[in-house]
Image 1 (cartoon, rainbow, N blue to C red):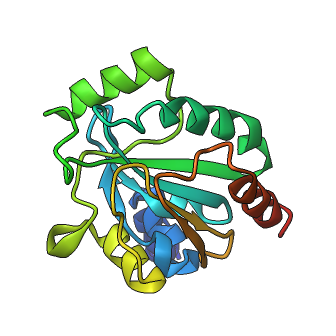
Image 2: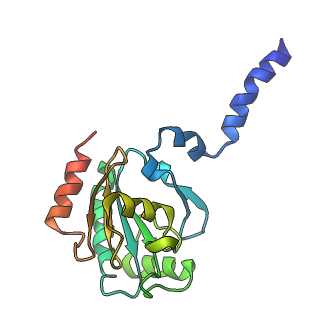
Length: 186
Protein backbone atom coordinates (compact mmCIF):
# COMPACT_ATOMS: atom_id res chain seq x y z
CA UNK A 1 0.00 0.00 0.00
CA UNK A 2 2.79 2.45 0.88
CA UNK A 3 4.56 1.82 -2.43
CA UNK A 4 1.31 2.53 -4.32
CA UNK A 5 0.90 5.82 -2.45
CA UNK A 6 4.47 6.76 -3.30
CA UNK A 7 3.82 6.04 -6.97
CA UNK A 8 0.64 8.12 -6.91
CA UNK A 9 2.51 11.00 -5.25
CA UNK A 10 5.31 10.90 -7.84
CA UNK A 11 3.46 12.91 -10.55
CA UNK A 12 2.63 15.58 -7.96
CA UNK A 13 6.28 15.77 -6.91
CA UNK A 14 7.36 16.08 -10.54
CA UNK A 15 4.75 18.80 -11.19
CA UNK A 16 5.85 20.67 -8.06
CA UNK A 17 9.43 20.67 -9.29
CA UNK A 18 8.54 22.25 -12.66
CA UNK A 19 8.91 26.01 -13.11
CA UNK A 20 5.66 27.82 -12.33
CA UNK A 21 5.28 28.97 -15.94
CA UNK A 22 5.37 25.39 -17.29
CA UNK A 23 2.05 24.60 -15.63
CA UNK A 24 0.58 27.98 -16.62
CA UNK A 25 1.25 27.66 -20.35
CA UNK A 26 -1.77 25.39 -20.82
CA UNK A 27 -4.09 28.36 -20.13
CA UNK A 28 -1.72 30.98 -21.50
CA UNK A 29 -2.75 32.83 -24.69
CA UNK A 30 -0.53 32.07 -27.69
CA UNK A 31 0.53 35.73 -27.79
CA UNK A 32 2.21 35.36 -24.39
CA UNK A 33 3.77 31.92 -24.88
CA UNK A 34 7.29 33.30 -25.02
CA UNK A 35 10.20 33.38 -22.59
CA UNK A 36 12.78 36.16 -22.51
CA UNK A 37 15.68 37.02 -20.21
CA UNK A 38 14.85 39.67 -17.62
CA UNK A 39 16.89 42.81 -18.25
CA UNK A 40 18.31 43.16 -14.74
CA UNK A 41 19.72 39.65 -14.26
CA UNK A 42 19.05 37.82 -17.55
CA UNK A 43 17.02 35.12 -15.76
CA UNK A 44 14.41 33.58 -18.10
CA UNK A 45 10.92 35.00 -17.62
CA UNK A 46 7.79 33.52 -19.15
CA UNK A 47 5.32 36.09 -20.44
CA UNK A 48 2.58 33.65 -19.37
CA UNK A 49 2.90 35.21 -15.91
CA UNK A 50 1.02 38.19 -17.40
CA UNK A 51 -1.96 36.11 -18.58
CA UNK A 52 -5.21 37.86 -17.70
CA UNK A 53 -3.56 41.29 -17.69
CA UNK A 54 -3.74 44.06 -20.26
CA UNK A 55 -0.24 44.42 -21.70
CA UNK A 56 1.35 47.39 -23.42
CA UNK A 57 4.41 46.04 -25.26
CA UNK A 58 7.00 48.66 -26.20
CA UNK A 59 10.37 48.51 -27.98
CA UNK A 60 12.70 50.94 -26.24
CA UNK A 61 16.10 52.60 -26.66
CA UNK A 62 18.34 54.73 -24.45
CA UNK A 63 19.61 57.26 -27.02
CA UNK A 64 16.43 58.14 -28.90
CA UNK A 65 14.47 61.37 -29.12
CA UNK A 66 11.51 59.35 -27.77
CA UNK A 67 13.47 58.05 -24.74
CA UNK A 68 11.69 60.51 -22.39
CA UNK A 69 8.58 58.34 -22.98
CA UNK A 70 10.05 56.04 -20.31
CA UNK A 71 8.77 58.55 -17.74
CA UNK A 72 5.24 58.45 -19.14
CA UNK A 73 5.29 54.66 -19.48
CA UNK A 74 6.32 54.32 -15.84
CA UNK A 75 3.56 56.74 -14.78
CA UNK A 76 1.04 54.77 -16.84
CA UNK A 77 2.19 51.52 -15.24
CA UNK A 78 2.04 53.01 -11.73
CA UNK A 79 -1.45 54.43 -12.32
CA UNK A 80 -3.05 51.30 -13.79
CA UNK A 81 -1.05 48.29 -12.53
CA UNK A 82 -3.47 47.59 -9.68
CA UNK A 83 -6.28 47.46 -12.26
CA UNK A 84 -4.38 44.90 -14.34
CA UNK A 85 -2.10 46.82 -16.72
CA UNK A 86 1.48 45.73 -17.29
CA UNK A 87 3.96 47.60 -19.47
CA UNK A 88 6.54 45.28 -21.04
CA UNK A 89 9.73 46.95 -22.30
CA UNK A 90 11.97 45.39 -24.95
CA UNK A 91 15.20 47.33 -25.52
CA UNK A 92 16.46 47.07 -29.07
CA UNK A 93 19.41 48.35 -31.05
CA UNK A 94 17.63 47.93 -34.39
CA UNK A 95 17.88 51.69 -34.91
CA UNK A 96 21.43 52.00 -33.48
CA UNK A 97 20.28 53.90 -30.38
CA UNK A 98 20.73 51.44 -27.52
CA UNK A 99 23.52 50.85 -24.99
CA UNK A 100 25.75 47.84 -25.45
CA UNK A 101 24.90 45.69 -22.41
CA UNK A 102 21.75 44.74 -20.55
CA UNK A 103 23.34 45.94 -17.30
CA UNK A 104 23.99 49.41 -18.77
CA UNK A 105 20.42 49.58 -20.06
CA UNK A 106 18.98 48.47 -16.70
CA UNK A 107 21.10 51.01 -14.78
CA UNK A 108 20.11 53.80 -17.19
CA UNK A 109 16.38 52.99 -17.01
CA UNK A 110 16.33 52.81 -13.24
CA UNK A 111 18.59 55.78 -12.46
CA UNK A 112 17.30 58.14 -15.15
CA UNK A 113 13.58 57.34 -15.26
CA UNK A 114 12.89 55.16 -12.20
CA UNK A 115 11.56 52.37 -14.42
CA UNK A 116 9.86 49.63 -12.40
CA UNK A 117 7.78 47.99 -15.14
CA UNK A 118 9.12 44.67 -16.47
CA UNK A 119 11.98 45.02 -18.94
CA UNK A 120 13.61 42.25 -20.94
CA UNK A 121 17.06 41.74 -22.43
CA UNK A 122 18.06 43.60 -25.56
CA UNK A 123 16.76 41.92 -28.72
CA UNK A 124 15.81 42.66 -32.28
CA UNK A 125 12.20 43.76 -32.87
CA UNK A 126 11.96 43.92 -36.66
CA UNK A 127 12.89 41.93 -39.71
CA UNK A 128 13.91 38.29 -39.84
CA UNK A 129 15.98 38.65 -36.66
CA UNK A 130 13.03 39.98 -34.63
CA UNK A 131 12.32 38.16 -31.40
CA UNK A 132 9.34 35.76 -31.65
CA UNK A 133 6.91 38.07 -29.83
CA UNK A 134 7.59 41.02 -32.11
CA UNK A 135 7.42 38.78 -35.20
CA UNK A 136 4.01 37.61 -34.01
CA UNK A 137 2.84 41.16 -33.24
CA UNK A 138 3.99 42.42 -36.65
CA UNK A 139 2.39 39.46 -38.45
CA UNK A 140 -0.95 39.93 -36.70
CA UNK A 141 -1.14 43.73 -37.00
CA UNK A 142 0.63 44.09 -40.34
CA UNK A 143 2.91 46.65 -38.71
CA UNK A 144 6.47 46.17 -37.46
CA UNK A 145 8.04 48.97 -35.41
CA UNK A 146 9.19 51.78 -37.69
CA UNK A 147 11.21 53.27 -34.84
CA UNK A 148 11.81 53.02 -31.09
CA UNK A 149 8.87 53.27 -28.69
CA UNK A 150 6.37 51.59 -30.99
CA UNK A 151 3.56 50.17 -28.87
CA UNK A 152 1.21 47.18 -29.07
CA UNK A 153 -1.80 46.79 -26.79
CA UNK A 154 -2.76 43.23 -25.86
CA UNK A 155 -6.10 42.48 -24.18
CA UNK A 156 -6.62 40.27 -21.13
CA UNK A 157 -7.49 37.36 -23.42
CA UNK A 158 -4.22 37.71 -25.35
CA UNK A 159 -5.80 39.32 -28.41
CA UNK A 160 -3.85 42.12 -30.03
CA UNK A 161 -6.03 45.20 -29.72
CA UNK A 162 -4.00 47.90 -31.47
CA UNK A 163 -0.62 49.12 -32.64
CA UNK A 164 0.66 52.66 -32.04
CA UNK A 165 3.57 54.51 -33.62
CA UNK A 166 6.34 56.17 -31.65
CA UNK A 167 4.48 59.47 -32.00
CA UNK A 168 1.75 58.12 -29.71
CA UNK A 169 2.85 59.20 -26.26
CA UNK A 170 1.89 57.37 -23.05
CA UNK A 171 -0.48 60.28 -22.28
CA UNK A 172 -2.25 60.15 -25.66
CA UNK A 173 -6.03 60.29 -25.13
CA UNK A 174 -6.81 57.54 -27.65
CA UNK A 175 -4.21 55.22 -26.11
CA UNK A 176 -5.54 55.89 -22.60
CA UNK A 177 -9.11 55.31 -23.78
CA UNK A 178 -8.09 51.99 -25.36
CA UNK A 179 -6.24 50.90 -22.21
CA UNK A 180 -9.16 51.83 -19.95
CA UNK A 181 -11.59 50.00 -22.24
CA UNK A 182 -9.45 46.83 -22.02
CA UNK A 183 -9.06 47.15 -18.25
CA UNK A 184 -12.87 47.23 -17.94
CA UNK A 185 -13.10 43.79 -19.59
CA UNK A 186 -13.02 40.96 -17.07
